[in-house]
Amino acid sequence: MDILNTFRAVPWFYIGTFFVFGLAVGSFLNVVIHRLPKMLEARWKDDCMEFLHPEEFAKSKETPRPKYNLMVPRSACPSCGHKITALENIPVVSYLALRGKCSGCKAPISLRYPVIEAVTGILTALVAWHFGVSMAALFAAGFLWALIALTMIDADHKYLPDDITLPLLWSGLLVNVVSTYTDLTSAVIGAVVGYMLLWLVNGAFKLVRGQDGMGFGDFKLLAAMGAWLGWQMLPLIILLSAAVGTVVGLYGIFFKGRDSNYKLPFGPYIAAAGFIGMIWGTSIMVWYLQTGRIPA
Image (tube, rainbow, N blue to C red; front, top):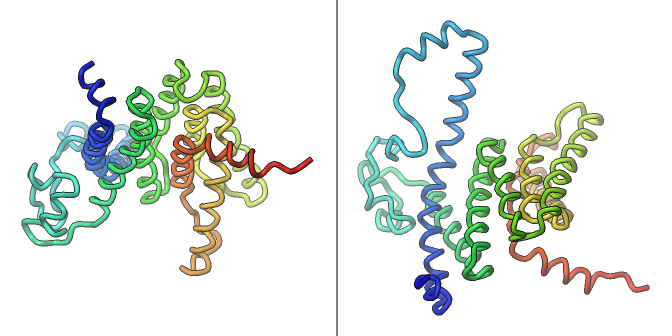
């Protein structure tokens, strides 16, 4: 309890702690974003082989494979194989100290890694500032971290893995058992309505165009938004995500020469809108009701 009292008495220390912890989590998220798709693809290949060629699959299982998961092997430079040491793995600081280059072969390190770490740290600190010293802040931080991983994986591979979306959905219902962000009834209705809305939109699109307009991961992600924030927040999330997605899509068509049939990953916009909804959603809706009401 002493640490909680300290956090309450010294807010900057509390927010700073969240920031530093967010930086560390951002470093781990870089691993998740890079490795989880590879792990899933390997799993899918095994499932296909087991179904189509069971005898070959059984033989392949007799040969031990190197372990590859979120913990092992140690991170290494893709150019020279240099194993990243603990001192070279300090979020943001190591990148600056190394001047963005591998200590072994001097190959450039992508700026993306420290950017994800910094963004995760800053947004985690924002969560701490907004919710104060509370369980809501801890849960919201977990919500944020899942959204960052989903955003980057969808941007890279154009799918949202069930390994993240489904736990995010169920955890949203669990945290609202005690009405952390909304009441449980609103959370359950939000999960159902969130999924069904995009499912119906995709079904209508498929009838007209003969193909899916979005992936099923988008349905699950919006369902998770409803589970965490309640059905009342869904209109705002849909409006924000659709608006940003439309602007980005038009930019790609007119300025980057993309074909109008280019499949734009929609998950990042749902994720961004969901985070905005969690932090500022109530204020936005109150502002709209006060300023946007049509006079009688």
